[in-house]
Image 1 (tube, rainbow, N blue to C red):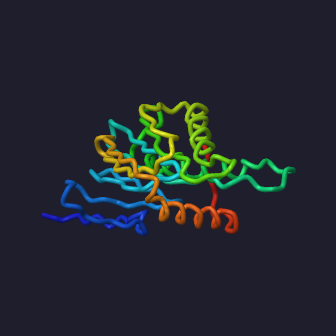
Image 2 (cartoon, rainbow, N blue to C red; image 1 turned 180 degrees about the vertical axis):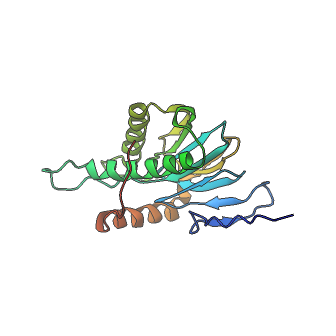
Image 3 (cartoon, rainbow, N blue to C red; image 1 turned 60 degrees about the vertical axis):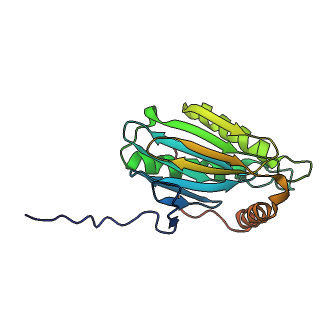
Length: 205
């Protein structure tokens, strides 16, 4: 008998994996600007403030994943489309997630989408979370993707556990007094988006 070894490289090797006795599957933890997809039973975990996560799966192929993105704040130059760069990064996050699901046997017509996040976790005249949520809802409508669940807005950060095989989501809202780490992480990521250009080609479909 000949044994066939799967030598396919992991396309997402940078994602932190861990085990938790409370859950039956391995947990992949993603941060702002990351995404994770699996055709195996896996849990994807993240913490959202004003950022948004899309949980997407093909229930027939049983492949699914989640992203975590923040759209940058508008630029001061009023001569530019201030949210154009935001749409660019939001679109990048969505297309990377969907394309990876399709590469693993998913079909766009069967995709189920759940959206979380977009909280107003800090003050100011611009509600970044609301803008993020509005953008992603518009994106889904334009792409003809089925939205089966959304928990967006409000003033609370959220912990999200997404079960890729079943599509189940466990969500916990976090008290505002504990926001400091989330705020700082999102602020640092936002600064990175402003100063570092997006690398690589973006495939739209």
